[in-house]
Image (cartoon, rainbow, N blue to C red; front, top):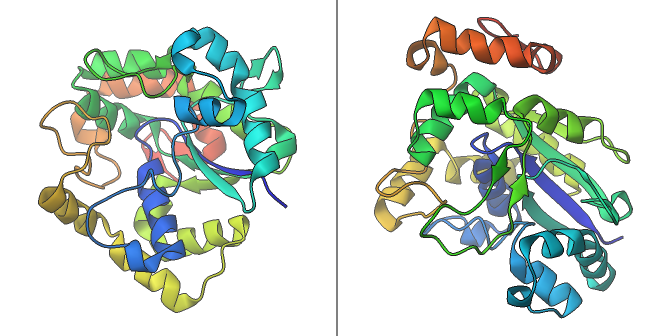
Length: 282
């Protein structure tokens, strides 16, 4: 059976880390050296997917027109695939004139990586070069959209995020096969267990030696060393490292009590559902 495994997260929640670990599991011979997550699971919002699938020239169409074509493109790609396809996704699962943005009939499964939104605030502020209050505003904005910053080529289409809670809900409650929910904090605490669960869900053959090797290749300190040696452009603001700290709970010292409380007040219901509590996680 062909179709897609969507590797989904709100930005700065561990999506790249998971994709690199899955890539190391599937292709252990390419697990070291320069970092490249796109070769394994390219961005589902990239223009080339639509161009290839539907034989159109993206430059002739508006972003809105291309956005409406995305479900058709995914169906066409799935129809011609000979193996399961993996794609990175930051979009919320939303509706279009042609049905759900990510059609259930070509969805094999969803690996959803979630992170405490208070830590997402800290990481996004660093990544995007914005203030903490601006980052909080984005996570609380029901109309939030992710798009290429000024000065960078628009290789991907605008991605509708919504607020953090609605993004999580759109995937957890999406029709079709239940998603495999992976918490960033669990990835830090026991990466082998999380990778094993992701591999089982996605039908990726593996043994314990394969898991150990993939974990070793994608330890956060190893990724940081490889970024320092070879560079890595993950879309971050200039001069800022992509793999920064790989820790949980940074919000406790980075956010003021008022800022942390603002995130908790807006997202309390979904945070509680995931297992995050007022002073940490359960």
